[in-house]
Image 1 (cartoon, rainbow, N blue to C red):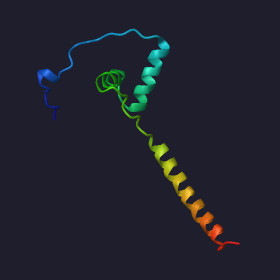
Image 2: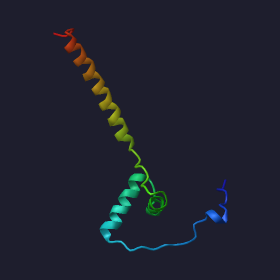
Image 3: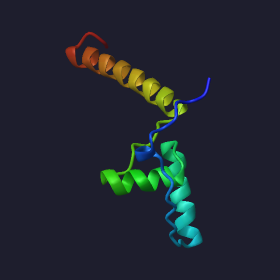
Length: 88
């Protein structure tokens, strides 16, 4: 099943060229990779919305965050028990 055709008003047919140093290109590509977009999509979004898209959070980072949250909850529970005098 093919994608539906875009109307002519929404097709991107104009090319716009900019010059970058190698360091700038590497930075742009790394930002685009973090956001899960191509460099051209990243630049277009920045120009027309005024902000960069939010970086996608890697799945491993989410799992690490959840594990740290569980550890923090356990420490809170133990501290509460200790401060109330229920633990020796």
